[in-house]
Image (cartoon, rainbow over all chains, first blue to last red):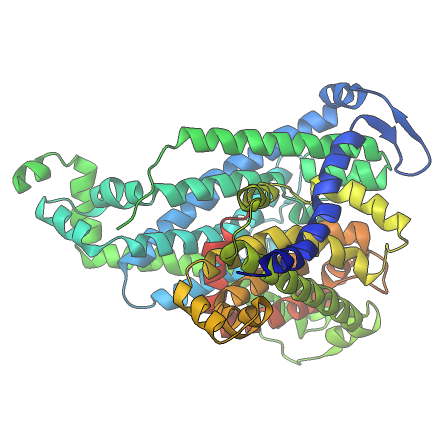
Length: 287
Length: 294
């Protein structure tokens, strides 16, 4: 169309200008900063790979990475697993499906900070929800947040928070499967568990992959719940990469090293997303 | 053939089909599981809301009962001591602005991407998809430095600008995918009527694509409203702090004041919950389209 050039320019410029300055430029600037020792403002020296060497010798960074991986494992297995089971179950019932959809999904809309505060109350030693239940049943109080347990205690709300998200994705995918497939299977005598393994799951493999990639990359971004429930403690037993990066860059003013940690997180995320993508091969399905 | 299929069933599968899928007990078991999970989502909130109407001592002594003498004291305290009303306002202003700018700039860019032909289109598309992989952690340090230089830290703009930038690629991708499905005839008809590209966008494409705008809007709002990490770095001062920062402060400073904590949680959760119940379909659709964002 005549005069399109002008409009294309007009329409695209604001979006790409803002994203360019405040998303793409900082992304590359961050990589550059990871080679500097800097508090962000006055002192800034180029130190080559020193930050990366520091990263690999940093005990806390190693611990946080392992914790992040452990959370990733729980998230991939339980978040996606529970969501899949719930979706298959809801799909098989007629009455009350709408009720379950609503109640399963709503933790998503609550901010992580509120959920964190909620679980702080649940785990509280004195009159937390859990200890009150124990007392009412005639047991002793339990200290829920210890060095051994703290990581599980943040894993639980993390899983709980996002199950609904994957549940809705799975349920939508399952409901798209045409009834003919199941009818044909029924003629072959395939029902119940086998039906699920041989029809439902293979047909939603694409969505399963998407969910796994999202869960894995999402696990690297875990921050709120850890920050509020345990602050990474006790004794760094629940420190994850997100909280450690925040602490280094903005509490300890080691911005260069913080940037290095961020680069490290992106590299892990991309690698794992790539591996998951390769690992689960699937063809696009259209019914 | 059918019999052969049956023969191949293992013991567990026979057991399963007999006792779960075909029997009443199976259905009962399914309902039991589903109800248990929905209890885990409902019960903690009910508990918090009930307790928010009790005074701190009653929370300790009778945590599971209905409030015997309902009191609004905790809510009053939330407004007085931590100024939750102000944080609410801050959150609404910042997240509202983010949604507005994302939909405005993302919307017109999506229109250009979906309905106009130009050389760099493919490249830009790749860049947009790539940018979904950039987490806030990877840009926050330089963004913070820039905001300090521009003297914007602890003003609304400090959060609005980077969040807008971070959400624009998502908006362009979702909205342009929707616009691409609109029939070409509509475009041609509007050209016949003498519409300019701008008019074509406002009079034809914007109204038709409103569902995708709603989806993007709800999700961008949620992401922005819930983003504790960027808020802590960029807008942590009390006069601009959004609600998530306030909650984080409450947990570290008033961690023993159960009444205040329950009231703060209830006040953050209930409005969102009401909006969710009203617009539940939009939210769920957002989850399935939002899945493209990493």
